[in-house]
Length: 298
Image (cartoon, rainbow, N blue to C red; front, top):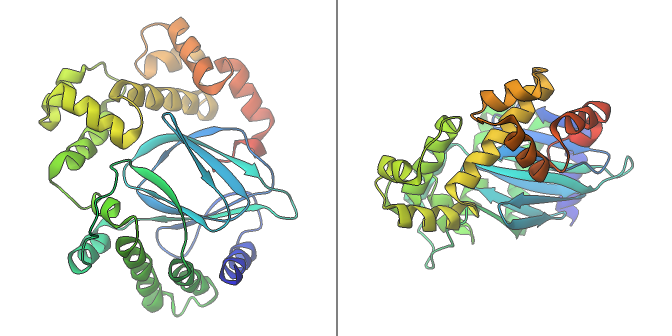
């Protein structure tokens, strides 16, 4: 816990306002929230997520992942999920670190680190307790924020150690999915990427299966195992998140947003939006604009 407290102190020194904060360390983002937040959707990239202070929950499909201080998550695909901070105060804010995975660095290490003896479940997100070695490496990486002259030399070494600890640990087999170009899990990765590019268009399971070289039944089974949802549920989440962003950021009206993301019926869009976000579109957007502090993506 002493190492975790040191990590929290470094983050607190460099982040004084709520929100997401890029850092001089490439691929590292720091997050702070002094309040609990409402559930907010986000597409999580392949990355390490380490909660240092406070607590949060992330929902992926029908699964809920709970983070506490010293717990980390590994994401291996671009996945639409809903996260929110469930414990934070101004005196003890929620603090979190994101490290996006460098596929080149990860691929090089994967060739040199022996694979684990037991395969992992294919789910594209997990949450585990961080061991002392992983926390030590994370602290060494963050200390480079206080030593910018050493960052170009020591930063990549600490980042490589973090990736090594993950590859050598219980998430090792899962981490290798990011660099693998073969097998069922790789095909699901291509299906996820294809939906990400084409979610505004109508498509059938048969077409998606043909795009990635799988049978429809095999695609459905393996896609759900990786993402905790079906391909069409995955598409729907991307559509709703995109529409919400259009209305909130670009001030687009409900009907235009619905048509823009591929809905043919504004009324169907509003029904699905309310089921997903808990409020009708106009009320939800008004709530977000009235309380921006509650809309921090965890």
